[in-house]
Length: 147
Image (cartoon, rainbow, N blue to C red; front, top):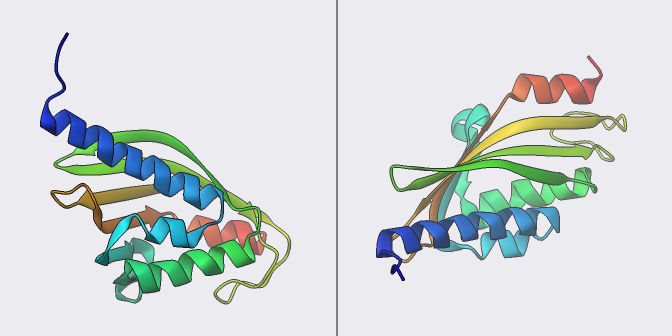
């Protein structure tokens, strides 16, 4: 019987943390999402530029809580999970129906589907220290404005 190497165990643990994050996202539980990261972890929502970066537990929680409030059926499907240079890259489809105004976009009851790339970075204890999220923001806005 082969033993699992420490780096393979760490990779499995990190991928498990990513799955736990997306499971909490599906359950609309921002507190559980935030609890997977160290207190000083950072998050960057790439399409939002410098205004899209902040502390995971404050800024991230605020964005995710707003999304969950405005899109009460918000959900996700993890399509792929790849290890790249100590980070875990997740290709995820995010989707939901807008029920409340969201960041200047009036609610029209329209549904969106958007492919996202989440890149999680971890410390030596396999805790999230940084998360970057990228997506086609123009396509997201077009779907919600009915264009």
